[in-house]
Length: 169
Ligand code: ADP
Image 1 (cartoon, rainbow, N blue to C red):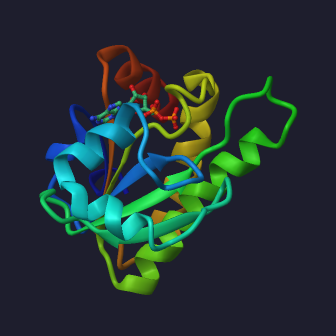
Image 2 (image 1 turned 90 degrees about the vertical axis):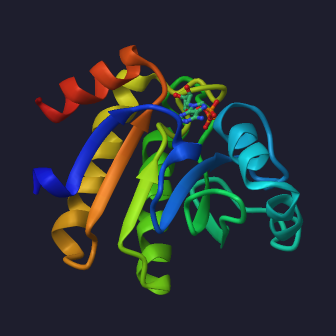
């Protein structure tokens, strides 16, 4: 399985894949962090398409084209805001990954890159988020043989190390 899952440090807007995942907010109207970077790189057509989609509840995901990104599609997943850990945050985070994979299946997509959803502005502790993300990714790779590659793109070396440790590498 390991060759189908890779962890890299970098900027997700530079990744070529069938889809990259955006850590979006419910408005789908763009924001800071990776969301802002994706919208800047994709161009204003991305916001125009997002605004046709309406609101996206926490834990769910929506798909658009990638416009000027090297990725063909963007899957906008809305992670939970950390509220101390007893407000269903773990399940809502897992749901983002599961719904992203469901959209990939629906659209026949085989390669995807994820950022570390919710662990920036939304404040989810990365040490707790990484095992949840990796558990869902591994489950999808087991259940979906059509998935060719899942890349987790960590923005900092520290974040990469947390994911590597959670993966056991
Ligand atoms: P959230 O609101 O879901 O917490 P953020 O965008 O604030 O989303 O942060 C999610 C993660 O994405 C953080 O680890 C942040 O460092 C990272 N990040 C920010 N910009 C990029 C980028 N261009 N590529 C990959 N990861 C990024």
